[in-house]
Picture 1 (cartoon, rainbow, N blue to C red):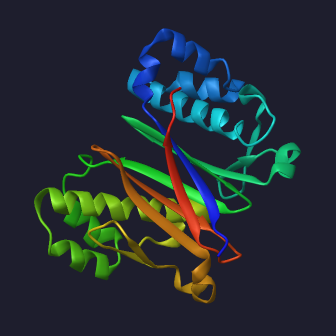
Picture 2: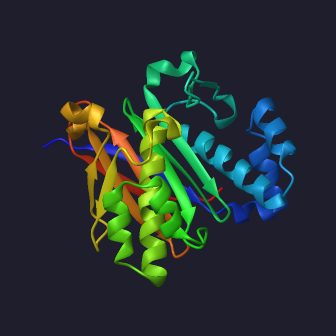
Picture 3: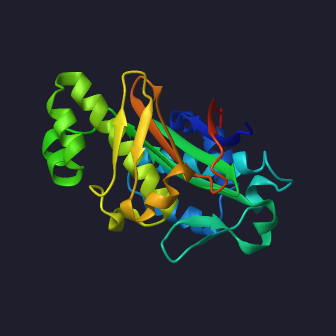
Length: 238
């Protein structure tokens, strides 16, 4: 069976502690991206922003004969960034995510996609948040866990939910409790997606992994051809 590919690239924004790496990265950002970068107050947030936007530009250039600095983007009405119309012939879709300590982007050909990375230590009261935002089945599952196991599984589910709503371009308007995920001990994912898409559920493909010891990474891809999707993760030096 033919398999579609989703390419996920991750990088450590700490590399931008090196002034030469930071300068090289800032040189390929657009004027708008530079303004957004300058508005950030904390150095750590600036590094994460520059690293993620530099990463997506560099990795897009792996798929098309366009220099990293030459890519241009637009925001759809739903806020999801896409390539400007002049690059539509490449049919590339992408999404990016950053946290303090890790940045990621996902790139596909002609398939909507989303990615999210989160630190395992980010959430202090996961059960309270799960009761408020998750589907009841996810909440009941988390009730059976405790300690680090609870923290990790909560973050794993969260990244999948974020990746899905980003791929759909609907954000939290979709309602995080309207769909749910079952994750087994080997990080296999069984998805129960938005009921309004029940007839098309086979087009959605998901992956969750531990990008490193501190972060979970969730990814979502919509393949209208309903082929299996292979998620390939690679570490990139900025």
